[in-house]
Amino acid sequence: MYELGPSAETFHSARDYPPNADFHVNETLGPKPPPAGVFDISNCIFKKKRRVPLFLSLPYFNKAAVEVRDKINFIGEPKQDLEFTLNVEPFPVLKYNNMHEFYKEADTFAPTKYLIALSVE
Image 1 (cartoon, rainbow, N blue to C red):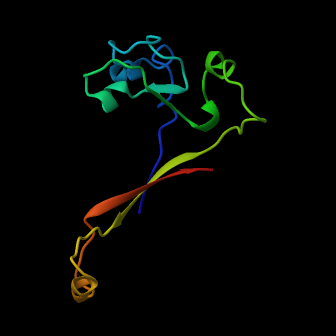
Image 2 (tube, rainbow, N blue to C red):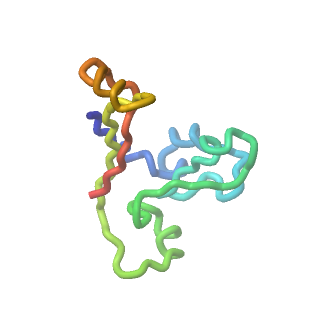
């Protein structure tokens, strides 16, 4: 299994960390560059067909700029300093017409796809 996590600078604004400017899509509606704590994934999802703003953040807007967190009404106290990891685990994905075919080859198949799970602790 592979365990991946973002670097500390991943969710920094390009104003604070200029190398992140390379990841911002100028055609996306919204702040340019977005504030710290949100990551513009519009181009990843829409492939330049639409310019609908779509942003990703850590749970509870963890490590987000004050200007972002102050506009969110949380139910209860939001959790702080969460660690975020992406776990990628190979697992076999096979298609068989019946269970007999599956059991016949069950000892020989190799992983062909990946199971991706997000973990927030």
